Image 1 (cartoon, helix red, strand yellow):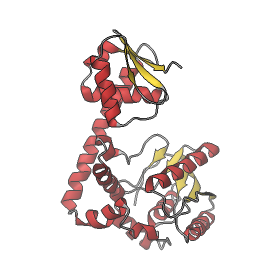
Image 2 (cartoon, helix red, strand yellow; image 1 turned 90 degrees about the vertical axis):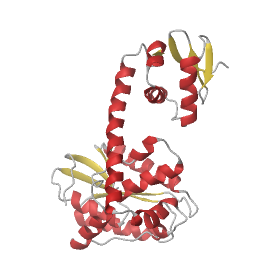
Image 3 (cartoon, one colour; image 1 turned 45 degrees about the vertical axis):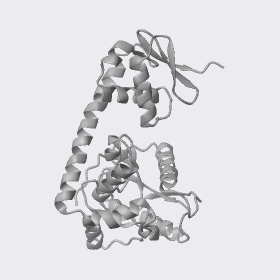
Image 4 (cartoon, one colour; image 1 turned 135 degrees about the vertical axis):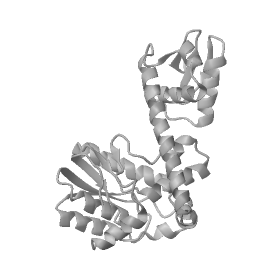
Length: 295
């Protein structure tokens, strides 16, 4: 089973489940990679210490450096809170070790699961492609199914642990995993994956357009209003969201971005539109600018 990863130093997220155990085994066969095994105990399950012991023993078996941390989140913690804590830990390990990136064991089924989950949450089209490789985070198993990973692990004689919370249907992701994905035909899966791939490719084109547009603007916190008004609406939304992020303003919800784009395109010169976090959008005749509230 082949995976594509460039030579370098990587932090490998290993939970002790079959996906990450199989990933770690594959990566150890890559001669030009230096691996740091990272394990995060969320503190949600009473038996989670057994996961750490397994991962630690695997790291020792492969002769790899092992790092772990504990979150003590508690049994009632949300999936989102657990994910934020986990990635905060992984990024801290990457920075401390000057690694090229983080490698996670997300696979083909996770890709479908995440797309369906985000559709049900009502996220925009970017929710379909939120699970993809990006700067500092590599997901080399996205082309491999869960079924094939299990078969690989069994064939290699690997040992892993099952997370009991994965069977809890109160979690939406688990419901999708156990009740929806199995009902998809192979043709359904192919069509959905093809659609996700198409959206991903369009997103790359749009992102490149946004970067080029922002590069020619008069200043970091200033946009040329005339050219902004002429942008197609979907491009204007992405430009504004990216511009705000570049200026240290947290990612805003879709309705706020929509409101700000409409204000930027229609307000008379001299008006302001509230952004959030102490910032306003100053709308002039020729420019758009970010300002802090005047105290």
